[in-house]
Image (cartoon, rainbow over all chains, first blue to last red; front, side):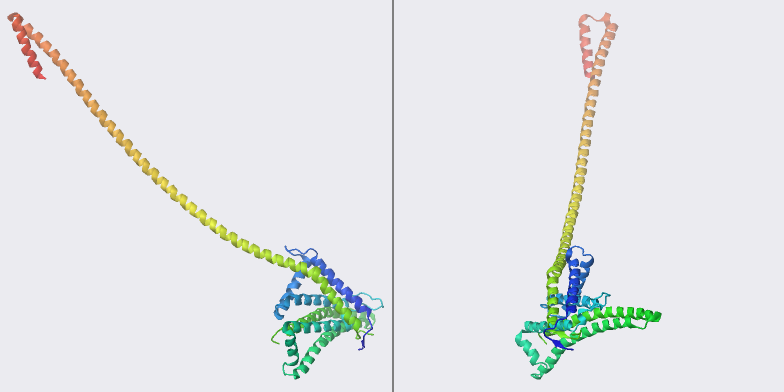
Length: 230
Length: 164
């Protein structure tokens, strides 16, 4: 792992763009004929998704924060699901490799986690006031010493968010590629087909679960930070 | 650079991509769909309210109709009772008139009968008197002179007059 201020990786940028384009296409299809009458097809799906996230976020977040946070969480979830699954599709990439998920590059989950960290602190300042936010950082659960504990807790949060997502998606892709390097011959083909298919299904589920975990944890951290009694 | 590299421009690009998606979805997807959902909620609420209003109105109308029916029934009863009473009175009047007429006619008939009898009796009496005079005069014709004859006749006539 190395850090670069100027280096730029094009693959996750392009696949990221593809991901948001796909989400946007689905969203536009859902909203194209948005009707207040009986909803059909993609509108139904989108309405269900919106309501699910409204319920989910409504249980945790303060009422003032919930409407916006639910839409942010839904957007994050949709983007991550598409991004995670993109790496499992049999699409060739320009360098001869198969396509990679943008989330299989550490920079993308890290960037999102860092952004979520900033949003969470902003929510703390907005809903507890600056004094309450500082108090929460420095004075809880113990005066002054609390800062060390809170700094650890708050900083570990985005790091764990980023590495959990990155690790799961990268591992899924790597193991999927390994299944194509099993022994040759009829036995190899059968094991490749069998294990490969099984792993594909598994990775598919993991992709969705990791997207959901990233989203739910963000919502949970933000709700905790925005609640006045914390 | 590998997939584990942290590259600052990629961090920022990822955030910008996310913000772009969030902005576009909010503007073109969430907003119309949320508006449609809200409108549907309002419509349903309005329909439920309307249904409640219609129900109470229907109940009011039903009660009104019921009271009208009751009123009509009472009126019909009243009319029937009136008609019955009126017809009873009329029948009584007709019977009374008929009785009056019958008794009047009976009386008239009796009077006429009596009148006819008197007339018949008078005429019989006249004839009897004539016959008596005739018979008497035949019997005593030769024995009486004109003066005696007149005297006897007067007496007889007087007796006949007392017969009445």
